[in-house]
Length: 151
Image 1 (cartoon, one colour):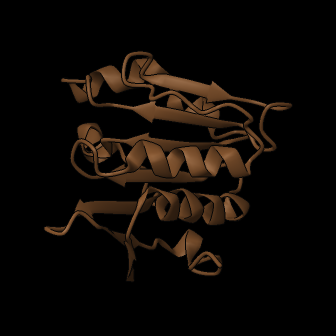
Image 2 (image 1 turned 90 degrees about the vertical axis):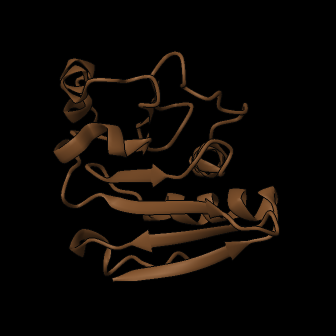
């Protein structure tokens, strides 16, 4: 099942991220796909702000994994950016499964994982439209069917 959402500006992308935050549970994976500048980090910032993060979350492009834990957020969450990963085998060294015991993952550039992406990942594709708006297409796995769409 897939659903689409259109966003006119960054504020709407942040608000959509904030609407997703209360739906998150330990063990959840959100896979964010889209080109450079599509809004993947912006959407994640909306999630993190709604989980209680006071400062603006940096892009984890260079750190690759940026973990957040209570008390700065209500649910442990690791923001992962795989843009600089060239070999899917290197992903094993990141220990991403460990974050799912008591928290969630938001992964930018999940296509770099190859077949390693979790089957119950919520996949959010963000495209930049010709007029500059963003179109988000959500592919909903069974684990999310009772929680989607965000309100």
